[in-house]
Length: 252
Image (cartoon, rainbow, N blue to C red; front, side, top):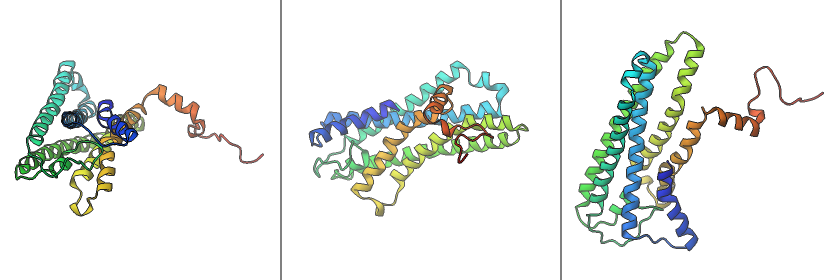
């Protein structure tokens, strides 16, 4: 998350302070590679985490075997490797396309769809096809996450105790919130109708999927952290009033 923001926001802020929109060709390529690599790896890790939740709730007795340290290392390495391979393919393919319609990218960072608009040959169809393949793979991961949570919620609803159900839901909700935010903003960015496309809207959508999720994710995950909850209780004590008590007297 820190890497995703650091790839795009500092350069955009520096250009804004200098009142310029310049970025070098190699800098644009590096920025594109890092964005795809980090976001792709995060999506793969979210898919792995869905499997982790599924095993923890639906197969708790086998958790130590299925999610041992060696298995976790292999799955994490696969997630990072898939993100790296995806980034290499897209970056190499995008910057092998001849650009002849100017050098202005209507975005606050180097983004594939905006770079393809500068192409003047049919070779951009190759990258468009690669984008379709990547989206199909991403959709497959999304289906895996959905099916995992169908199994999870089915198992949770069978738990007899309310405390057990609450504990299971509290384990899954942060991850589910992050996945929902990540997928919804990405789908809106790349699957919105062409009729809705405009420079202003494209800018807002790019911020939504490239900046908002990485910025909000740490906060979402930290909501289960006891130290953070204690800090929030001190800062906003009236939001954590214990049941059956009133913090503020309305009248004497």
